[in-house]
Length: 318
Image (tube, rainbow, N blue to C red; front, side, top):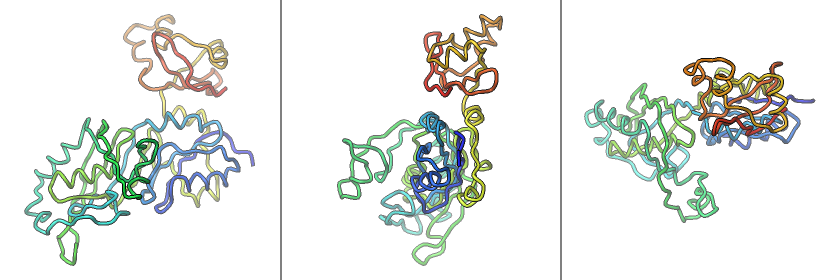
């Protein structure tokens, strides 16, 4: 079977690593040239973007895109991993997380403090490298590193439901929050759960995480592994790129030049040269993000970046 280059949008099941999913897609696609754009923890489910053949060259840029999640956070307990996979390290007294103690105002203030541009300390059990070693390996060896806070952006952190659950045999001893989170690449939702628990003085950890969107790819486009085993669905390379990046249409001459690694005038410069007004030219592209450049026949030629009035190829596909 010859599989075309493109993306496979997988609805990852719980209990599997992202590497497990890649291994399954390799078998289904009949090629080893497969990778993914952004790891999901084993307990997490939802959108995992997998690239096949030439589309693997998109993955590094897709990893940087915005993500959306549906999560459940438990207040009243902390764990060693900041999620339900770890050992419980502390449990708050019932009164600390009772309905009377945890007011809507207190919760809203804590959530607001974790929204916007924030400094976040990654979980100790994470893939962050410290002196060449993964943090989770050091932590599991008993030498947990002191990780430095990193800037991340939480565009949206909305609590959609609050319910009291049993803990240590007492009803109402813990509080579960359902939340939606829209955030920048590199944001750990389980660290948000941990920090929310700290902010309300009760401890917290993540009990459920479902990724609902990666950039332009939503859960409505995702297929389970069972569905893919029955009918292998690949989002073609040209369509995959246009869903994730701004688009620039090339002339035939520009497409030929770009296919050979040449540079072009920046989109705004080219638009002015073609007679567009200055305001319209400024809106042609967002120079902060890569641009997908297409030949007149719809073939994806390259991903471009712009600097100093020129557009240069980051990756050439033609």
